Amino acid sequence: MPKDYSPFTPGQPVPVEFFVGRSKEVQKLVDSVKAATAGKLQVVFLTGERGIGKSSLASFVHRIAEQNHHALGLHSFLGGVVSLEEMVRRVFDRLLKESLGSTWEHKVKEFFGKHIRQVGLFGVSVEFEAEGKDLRRLVHDFAPTLQNLIQRLSDEKKGIFLVLDDINGLAGSADFANWLKSFVDEIATSKPLPLCLTLVGLEDRRRSLVSLQPSLARVFDIIEIKTWSEDETRRFFNYAFGKVGAAVENEALDILSRFAGGLPVLAHEIGDATFKADTDNRIDRKDALEGVVAAADIVGRKHLEPQVFAAIRSPRYRAILRKIAADPVKMNFVTRDLRKQLTAEEQKVLHNFLARMKKLGVVHSDTEAGPGAYRFGNQLHYLYFWLEAERAKKSRD
Image (cartoon, rainbow, N blue to C red; front, side, top):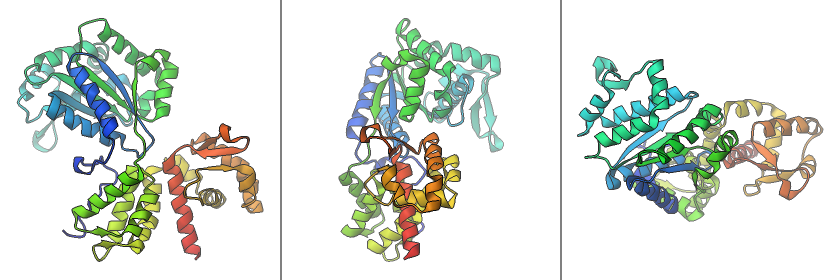
């Protein structure tokens, strides 16, 4: 295969053939889909840290739900959405686009009626369109609208697998939290709706919703995605490189697996960078190290929040982070030990540095370890800073 064909897909949901592990989580979500198609409402919160593969798992189950359980799969990405009206519009727009080319396309178009607009060059695509008052009505009547929809599609579909992904903008909204609780209550006390509603987000988003509407605590069936095991990570790299006929030496595999940290998003970034560094179709230690170093900048640019990235532009802040992240395993630190490694100038800004990092969610107090102890709140942050430290060390050498 040409060298510009990479078996890795950084920044995209993982293709089904590269889906590794997660058998328990997949089965649990599939069981929820099966229960929904049998007529029992399911409300799932799929959680895990950034880069863990939440969207990929939802997409994987989406395909299973459609192929094996005759469910209508709707995976709606809500990045930037802050209103219920826009959320509903995107859900129905996803439905319209999913129907194109299907045997039930005409039923969906009849269902939407006048709310269809031709878009794209020469009108080759369609878009769901509704005015403000119509969208507000759909927000209020979301449950009966879905009930009418599945009734129309009863010959083709047994239920709905609805994924609301990237809910950051909605998770802090009391309107959304209260609407969600009312939506669940309405279904529970009216005509059954064969729906598996799956929200995808970080754990703090779930906690935010529960703080706004405490009754949601007993509504969610939580599925938490853990990091890959070392065996799963090695299996991923072996399979991915094997797809393009590249062999991986054990020492290289050790390095790749160690730096990926069990996070699929990092595995794809590091794997892609290593693939590009390789010249002889055999991944050795040199290729792996070059890939890890090259991935550091990519990970920083693509996966750190802009405000975090801006905050660590200070040379002293970056120096402190490199010293904190010098150990590839130890994700916690104690300030009294850290101070011993800092220069006088770095010690002067340590207090402000810690306050800034805590506010941004990069680190948090580790109460179990005692006073002055901290942990990185997100493994993706820590691994990036570790990669940065390794790169800085290499440049000095």
